Image (tube, rainbow, N blue to C red; front, side, top):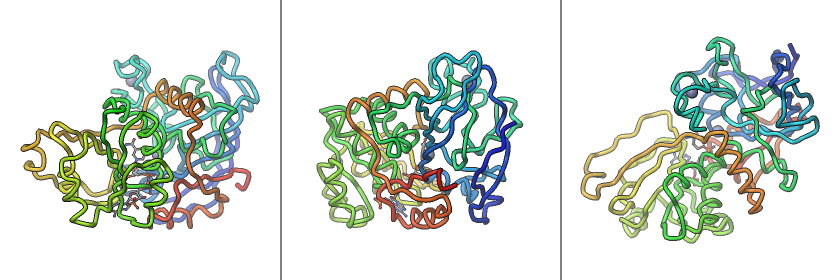
Length: 347
Ligand code: NAP
Ligand code: ZN
Ligand code: ZN
């Protein structure tokens, strides 16, 4: 067992504070990663604060992990000591259901082991995330990370990156697509980058007028303020797809009004309260609503390789571990441009 330093919440109202626990010893197929950087996802906040009703405490959040391989097990062939490696939102799955066999472990039908706030395949041992000094992970669930990109800015690709890349690929977004990204936060700004990289016409729909210049700098073709009724009306029936990355309650009926005949609203944001949708927001234009969860290991690797080839990384603000509670408060106010990344040297 490996003594590990971390920051954890003890319950849904306690702040993040120093915590020590043990990682498992490195097994034959495991690698030990010395964590260098970890991104801060809004899912960390939802779960640390018990907003999804499924929290296991104490909880060490963090699922945008990059670091250096410090040790490899006897059977490990994919990594060697000193390689860079990444860990995203999942660290294991049943490996035998049809989703796992298809390389879509995020949709495992038996038991998915989330990186934190989850359990190992024994369905008992809690998992703990990347606000920590090290992690032990099976080589099959670890990602290869290119040395050519700024490692700090690669960390958010492990969740914000794949969560936006996967649905844009699945719904075949390309040069003929007119899409909108709703919410310009960690996920949203990556959605803009991928939408443009795939050749689409991209509009950012935001509550923050102050983000317009950033949206354009990130590559967006247009910007629309969702609280301005005129602007929403002007955009009626104009998008093939809207990717909703919003973390808080908002009106989906007005969002749906901007989707074309046969278009799709893809939900990736998970506000604590369930939305209300009127059937007439869908019926007269045969619109669809869908959801999408992160991506499988194969697609996450494909996304990381795509980013290395195209020079895509996240826009980040570095923080020290002790400043994590302030970072959470700022994210809740929408005050992050566009991802906080923890420097684990400060742990
Ligand atoms: P984030 O960086 O905090 O960004 C969320 C954005 O939502 C904000 O920047 C803001 O954009 C907008 N927003 C916030 N409050 C709002 C409100 N009251 N009304 C309208 N818009 C509001 O969060 P994130 O890390 O990108 O995560 C976004 C959501 O995706 C979270 O719910 C997270 O749990 C979820 N998520 C899902 C998956 C998945 O697999 N499906 C994976 C990762 C995260 P503007 O200022 O532009 O309005
Ligand atoms: Zn996340
Ligand atoms: Zn499975």
